Length: 130
Image 1 (cartoon, one colour):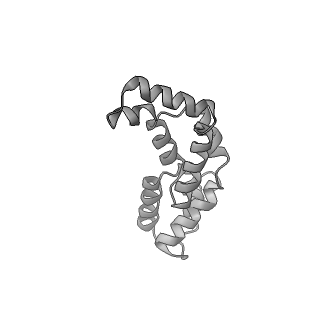
Image 2 (cartoon, one colour):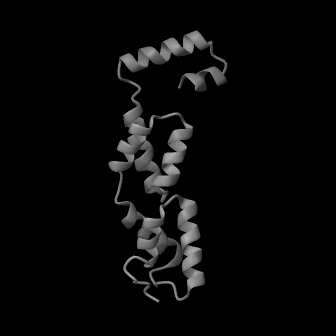
Image 3 (tube, helix red, strand yellow):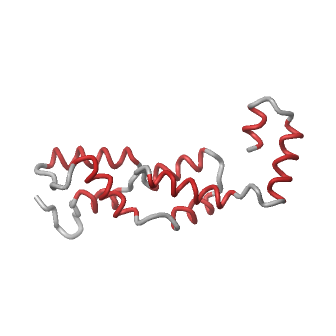
C-alpha cells in the first residue's frame, strides 16, 4: 500500500504513517487480503500457481500465500470445472486435444497434478481414458 501511495505522488513519510495507522487499527490485513484475492480469482477460474505468483509479485509473504491457498477451493475440482466449461463434458478424443486442454489449464495456473486430474491422464496409475 505504501508503494502504491508513493507512486500516486504522496510523500513517502506520510504514506508510511498512514499505512502504519491502518495496520494498527486492523483496517489493513494482509492475510484477509490474500484470502479475498484467492477466493475472487479462483471464482474466475484461475489456479493456485498463477494466484501465488501474482500475490508474490504484490509483495505478500509466502506463509500468507500458502495459508490463503490452503483455505481456497478444491483445486482439482476447479480444474475439472474450468476444463469442462472451455472444452465441454466429453473427454478428449486424442492426445492432441488432451495436450490442448493441458496447455490451457497450465496457462490458467493449475499444477500438473490438477491438470492430470482434469484431463483424465494419470501416468502413475496407467489410466489414460483414451
